[in-house]
Amino acid sequence: GTESKHRRRGGDLRTRSTELGSAVTGSPLTPVLPASTTVKKSIVLSSENRKELAKQAKVTKEERRAQIDERYKYLISRLADGIGLSEQQVEEAIISDDKFQLIEQFFAPSGLKKLLFFYQDVLQQKSNLSLRSDESMNSLLQKKLFITMGSTENITGTCAFFLRTSDKVITASNASQEVNFGIFDCTNGNILQGLEFFLSQIMVPALKSQQNWGAVKEGLKNSQIQDFLYSVDKFVGALSSSRQNIEDRIQLTKVDIDIYISNLQNPSDYITAG
Image (cartoon, rainbow, N blue to C red; front, side):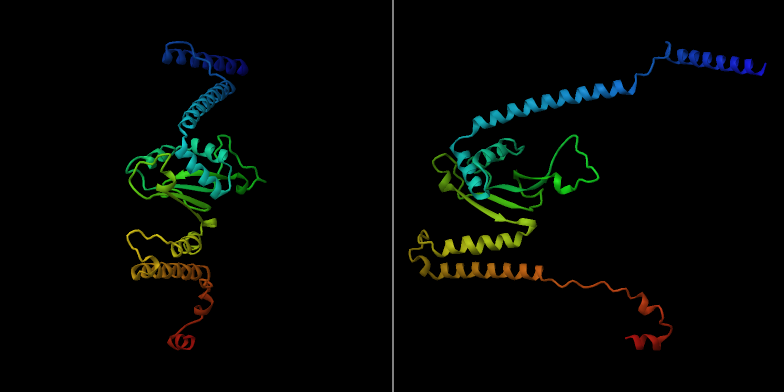
């Protein structure tokens, strides 16, 4: 009766679906692969890609390690001493850096005038990175030494810099004479404090004890030299004042004035409130 009609209709419907599929595709319906199979293939592919990338990175690092000569070793030793890392740690950081080529550009004749390094907390890069409910962002931060142009990353830790004193090519024999090294401690992004400390505690004392001023034979007794040192002192004083003003800035409390003006009805009320 009714049941057999429903069964027949169901059977007809299934048959029609199959026929429709065959008509559209020109062949019987292709069975869909289980999702697990697709996932397994992507895992295998991504695993192979990771292995290939790791292999390429290792080759690149070894090629860069072979480039390290006395010029590089001079930079590495200064960085290690200044930041408090071992020379091996600094070397590993440098040869792993995607801006490694900037060092060679710095050494070249009329090359880059400055070479900057930041040493600070950075977010760990992991392909399978996931935060558990009990895991804080701080646990994902890790100290890292990296080369920078100084324009794309904010400084939140230590800035180490190398400056050229001429356009000469930097060689193993002249690196210590032609390259100056310095450090700003800009912990928590406090750049003014780092600059003030560097100038007041390092540069100004060094300048005031300088005996050789080149063509100026009188040295520190020369009026132009004295004016220059006076200007530097004034600049450091201005930095100090600016930093203190920023640190001691007045925070105005937000006041909800609705409760004061909601009951004002006429001009005399406004005069009284004023």
